[in-house]
Every structure is written in C-alpha cells, then in structure tokens.
Image (cartoon, rainbow, N blue to C red; front, top):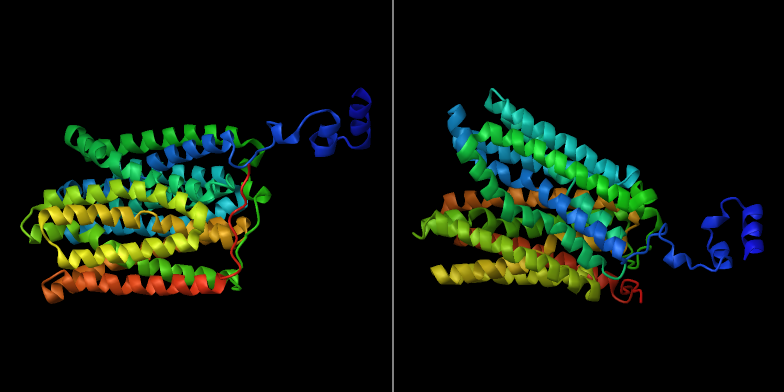
Length: 437
C-alpha cells in the first residue's frame, strides 16, 4: 500500500484525488467526502437549506399586499397609485430572475443569492425611511429583485444536486415561495399593527438579510468547492426535441405566459368574486389561502410524478387539470362549491411553474439552465400580470366574471396545444432520468 501511495504521488502530485490512485490506496472514491454524490444525504441537506432561504426570501412577494392600505393612507394616494408598488415587485422579480439566473450560471448560486440579499435589505430599509410614495414604489423593485434570487436560481441549483429525485427536488425548492406565503402575511400584519409600517419594513429587512446570509454561508460550507459552478459535473440532457435552445426557450416562454394568464384569474380575483356574490372578502381570502396551501401539496406531488414520467407529461397533466378547475368555476358558485373548487385549483396548478424548470434541465445544457429558467419565469410573471389586468377589464366590460373565466380557459388551451406539440416532437426520443441504486 505504501508503494502504491508513493507511486501515485511521484507520478502525479494531484493523483490523491484520482479514482485509480484512490483504489490503489484501498478506498472507494464514491465514499470520499470531498466528492459530492447526487441524491445523497448531502444533497438533501442542501435542499433543506435552500427551502429555508426560499421561505425567507419570499417575503418580498407578500409584504407589499399587506402594507398596501397603510402606505396608501400615509401618503394620501389613490389605490391605483399605491398598487404600483406591487407592479414594481413583479417587474423586479421577473427581470431579476433572468439576471440572477445568469449570474448563477457564471459565478454560482452563492453569488446570486448574495446579490439578492443586498438588494432586498436595501429595499426594505430604504422604504422604512422613504419620504414620498414614488420612493416606496421604486424601492419595491429592489425587493422583487432580491426575492427572485431565492426562487428560479434555487430551483435550478437544486436540479444539479439530484438525478434520481430531480423533479421532486425542484418542486420542493419551489415550495419555499408558498411556505413564505403562509407565514409572512400574518407576521407582517402583526408588525404593522404593533409597531407601524416603517419600523416593520426596517426590522424585516435586517432580519431577512441576516438570516439568509447565515443560511447561505451554511449552504456554501456544504457545497465546498462546488459553490462556484455546481453544474459542471452534472448529467447531460436526455431528451432531444430537435429544436435550438433559443427557439425552445421562446416556445416555453409563450406556454408559460398562456398558462399563467389562466392561473391568474382565480388567484387575483377570487376575493373580489366572493364579494360580488355576497359572501364577503374574508371568505375570498380564506379561499386564496386554501389555494396556496394545496399548491404546496401540488408542487411536491408533481415532483414525484415528474421523476417517473418526465417534465413535459407532468406539465400537460397539470395544464389539463387547471383547465378543468376553471370550467368548474363557470358552473358552480355556491359557497361550499367555491371552497372545494379553490382547493382543487390549488391542487392542480401548484406544480405547473416548477415543471418548466424540470423540462429545461431535461432538454438543455446545465451550464445555461439558470438563465433559461429565469427567462421562462419572467414570462410567467408577464402572464400573471397581464391575466390579472385583462380579467378586470373583461369584468368591467361585461359586469360578470363568466367571460373572464372563459378567457382563462382559452389561454389554458393554448398552453395544452404547445405542450402536446412538444411531446409529439419528443416521441421516441425521451428517456427516464438516470437512476442510481
């Protein structure tokens, strides 16, 4: 054994990391703690940290909704003017997803999240000291940018840590956004009522930045030398759609817009819809919470499904199911029925957006997955924003949400057609993700 070690060291000073020399020393490189193994215990630890970071970072998507009434009253603004803060959050989230995804591809997830932490902290603390509404609105762009780093890039990075359970990992990472949606609104509301909206923004900014920084440092220690660019050692795409990456990204972006226009109708308008039906806004808020809760179940369940049948088929099932739920809204408007349909809608649609990240990892090189996922998520933000707006316009024109639901169903059908077309192109060229063990 000593001669083997000496020979390895003399022939190549770096040979201690080489598999052949490791075998000569009587060790198994697969058990070497310095070599990361996909789907291992270390991968699940990383994923748990990623969910924690995503849950904290998602505060930017929910705090603006809670603070809207008090900010409007503070500056004596119209509801429309104050609502521009939400528009800026979504704009920052969409554009930031592309930017932080590109940064992740080049420099790694730690750098991308670090930029998000800085942007979010500056945004929240700046809002606490804002003296004009326009400052609040502009600073919400930074908050949206900060939140974006804890969604798309984390989903993409999680896909690099797994082979056998890649779909499940991506959807679990994406669930941090919904977990934050269940936790942050009541916490933020309590802070505003107890201390005021300015101190609450400042404290949340400091807490979120600090907590995410600590969690990111822990993640970096877990990743070790792979904290730079973890995608360099992952498996290659295993589906050939016979399309260029740019063309396929454009097609997936169009599909994402279409499905999210449909998705936005109940999510954005369910509270107002319940008010129009005489059930009250509180009941609508409960239905929205129910959607988000079942959305978590849907995301994790779709991950299990994607690991068995692939991202494209999972997306098709989710899209068809979402269209079915939208149809049910047309025929049933009783209070009990709406609660049931809202739960079904959340159960059906929660896994749709993460499915795009899974598809991109199945068909495109890992080295550019962060950028591609960011572009598709930007498209989903455009779809949600446009869908929420056009549904309101349709309601104003018709005096009813029936036509708005029909509009959502039409956009959903576009998504279904696109996914079916991609599946037909992939027929005979799809394989299951490589499984270990």
